Length: 201
Image (cartoon, rainbow, N blue to C red; front, top):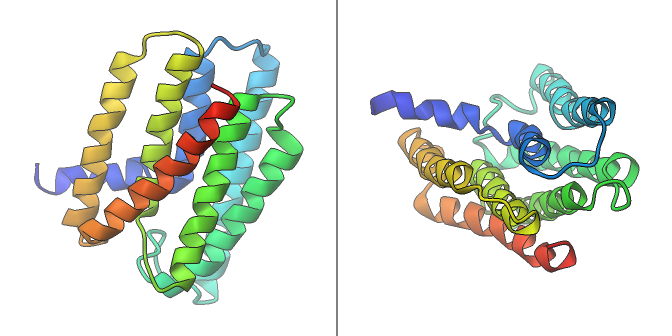
């Protein structure tokens, strides 16, 4: 497959995982939201988890705090991860609340825990794969939706499992991570989502 597989590193960049999760929820879940509410939620997610982080990224790039959107340097990850954690906290506190949508609330709560764990690992001197955190969290969430709503999502889940392998392979091929960093990222992405399942599944 050569360098073609590297497209998965961009397609499943951590910035995009939140919107993928929301789209999976509204497309496959038995949603009780109106179309207007769905559009408003999607717009909020896009602004808080994509547009604002990208704006901060270009600000950090302009002042020399980061040099790549992939954040290959451990030291460059601290501020972006902290900003992302703050934005996720705002999201679940003001927008995607437990009362309004518990399934998405716990997904983003799990994402917040994963982000904080990744930040702690950076301060401890370890770099984990943020790509694997995102894609594995999305996969667990999709499996949980299948169980929660009692719907068969074999094809989407199979596609996501395959994408997990493609993302991991692309990160290795790009020499962005070691195998150990991919394993750590997988664990940090999966465990918070699994730990919160009993609260809403």
